[in-house]
Length: 285
Image 1 (cartoon, rainbow, N blue to C red):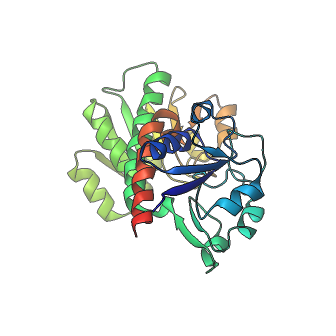
Image 2: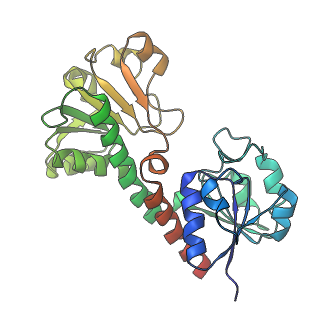
């Protein structure tokens, strides 16, 4: 049986994934990847000339992860083509769609087989490794002192928070972790970090050299930003809307970096492998 995958848009991770799938013997059909120079070297990829041609030839479609950055168009950084999400949805009946952060109406439509890869636990854990490494890389580049012996606060003790705290501890940082749940605070202490209960956050904020936030709601507001050291570095890893009042931080000359999509930027090959593993599990079902 011929193995066929259609790929619609996507970033550098998807480009690397397409190459991996080719090596594994898949027939690849693409649209909105015409600027990916690495793929142009292959004579076996079918670059469709139109969206309608692509959809007509496709059964299983892998799209950008997440599907969109603006909630209106599919993310297509390797193309000048603008593909409305609504148009993609209307043409997806009877097809299998693999993507991330799909609009709810995709999942409610029984005529479409949908798999949201960002809801896959294996993928999100592996992806957190690349995110944590990327955060530490940025911290090393942007903070003028060593991370070793620096006071670093990790806000949010989820997947990324747990991994980045462990990595920071491994390079000698003094790691503090904020959490709300008593269970998380107990784990933080058991792992050898200093626990900071959310209710005690304000009285501790002035001691930190670096803050790494994973909470996607406004946690570092004006009042809390006023309590920070002036030379503090804030790395916000949280998805939109983020956890920092960026405008106020800028006015106060507080260095803040909103580091989104780190796996695709710092480790695109590993990120592609993570996606491939999940994709193969879906296909084999």
